[in-house]
Length: 199
Image 1 (tube, helix red, strand yellow):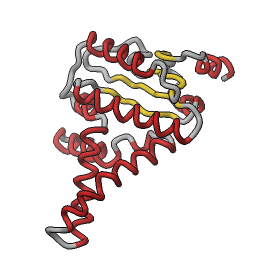
Image 2: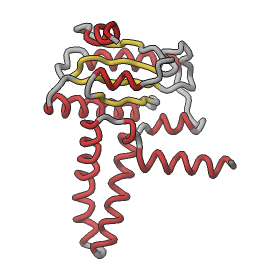
Image 3: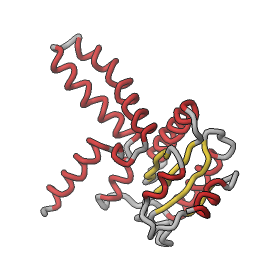
Image 4: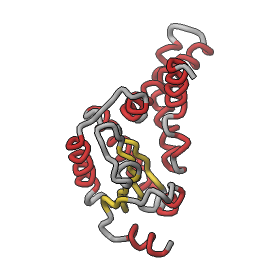
């Protein structure tokens, strides 16, 4: 497949879904709420200049694009296109900052990494595959999703290819490729370790 077509398909798929298919239920709901929150003011603005149908279409496209840029693993996409490299020390520093920010957050049970880090292949062309496991409860779910949203935004500002999601429980981690052993970054109550001992 020619590169321009391949890259166009990758960008279009990332724009359309930007991680939605990998999310657990709570984060999917949060994702849709963000799109809606962005959509409403845009719709009211466009409605002043054009008809209802065009207002809906334009608002949906612009809202989804804004959401994609600020919360859609932008530098992971660039990395997949071979357009981004991040210094190894910068990646390690970011992981340390992430753990410090998670520390003491009652809504977060654990932070775990996979991918190149678990394969001991972390390099300047790698992304950081991180999963945040949240506490039970609707409020904890909302707070954990906000935390993850903010981490994606921080990663964007620091040009970090961070592939991060909020999981609703430890069982969601069992769906990840077993050939990639988890690297536990944060597990203050040892609940994640207990989970893996039971599996």
